[in-house]
Image (spheres, rainbow, N blue to C red):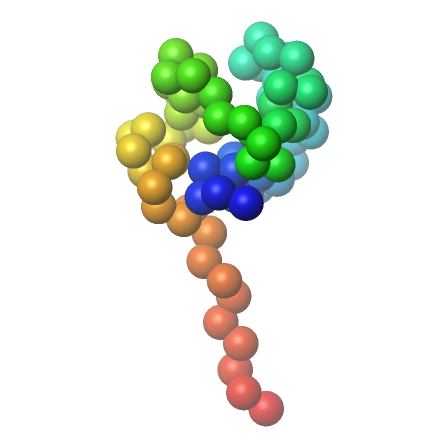
Length: 77
């Protein structure tokens, strides 16, 4: 899974949206959106702009290159 697909999944789940709801908002078929989350495909630039706007991510570079989620810190027993 790429950083982009992990971020996309995280942002969707954080907002409690379904893949269908996001795909409708972005005007793409749900299968195409699923492929992005599964890391089988990546959207073209114009859709990256729409995705960043939809999820209110200020920078497309951030969406593509930085993990928006961090693994939970687990204290040793």
